[in-house]
Figure (cartoon, rainbow, N blue to C red):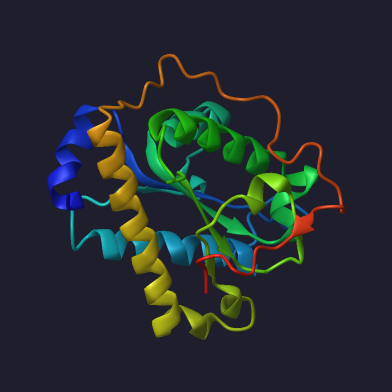
Length: 222
């Protein structure tokens, strides 16, 4: 079923966002967001491109990126709520994403993995879609099992990548995945269920060090 027809049901079932963008926020020495860093830039470019592409299907595309939170907001609670109320999580991945210094990335991954297992029970679909800004040879076991991913490593070399056909195809793949996941949870009549959801306290990558697993080069990504 097209997302156009699913959108009203999603909202009635408590879903606030079509997508949640997870990324390892890089800051300057004084604690400000480093807008020039390729990881932060990639997260914003992906968010903006998803909003544009979703706009062909729904009147109000809703993609969460935490840079929009204002001062005075309980950001931990806001992130937890936004993730639980999202259909899919896109993870902007590089080696630092799995590092203990970015524990919230691991918590977000663990949370969406848990939500996806419930909402997509008896399905091969996953609620997490990694976008590899840097393809590591070794990955945590939690990341290895994700069969569908996108290669956006060209963005690390030049911002011109965001104007390429390859990038737009990757964005189209994410939107198609959102549609498949939305349809699957609608068929199962799975509301967001955030009132009962307990956000995990352990990172999905807590036990992983450099001895990860080989990257699944036969996966569906580009």
